Image (cartoon, rainbow over the protein chains, first blue to last red):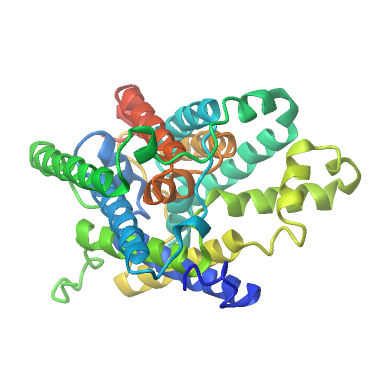
Length: 196
Length: 177
């Protein structure tokens, strides 16, 4: 059955319309969770507010489990789902640059749109920065295309790399997440916090 | 949703409930469209459109633009991520309206000025935009959506983003706490 658009059960235009609806859900949940506030987001790096960690890992686990169960029930063909490719060098270097951008700017791209939607001027400015950063990457692509394309490993799953089944890896990830949630609850009690 | 606190905005959702709801949205994206959520890709469409509009002649020589055009032969603004991120603006606005949080303001720690906050936001945005192109996706597209489909690259990018931010947190603490 699923994915609906890949199996052509819905048209390309319907798919775009549903992207808009999915986006509304995405933005609504982000804002309801407090992701429109850069000070709340940055809290995860100082322990005073760990909402990012809790929402992020809960969401990743729910979606991962959902996909595994949907596949088990025959509702979705996981071979037709987009799996992000792994280019080792750019995944690490890109992540490092993004991490610096996160702690300096206080937003990531998705949350900056969320912040802008309720009028955060710093979020609008961050989006302006995104434009400039992407423009620089695009115009100077010849300088870093070697790094961009280096160490292509294909489309491996982390479970394969670790030699585990998807289910066992998923179970271990849940245990890791529960341990992190426990640390997060402890940190929030220890560090003073205010609501932004 | 505490209605007795009429003076201030509504409180935020419980983060675990928010996480479950976000997970369901991400699952729906995969079930409906066979792909995860994203954010930076929509800005990439805006940049590509700007370049091809302002300098149509030279844009053909840019390798990154060529690569994008090969994947998206039509109008660069008619992509899944552009529609999704337009939805994010609507969804965020609706949530902010219901919660009484709609307000134009520069949010910053009392220890820094608005001007400094805006400078930092711009710098962070430039870095994040560049990094998201190099890393083939941001916190949404590479890290969150990549993790949900167990992509090795997604987990690596997620660890690099959060690891770096934690490693640098001490040096930027005065901007936040």
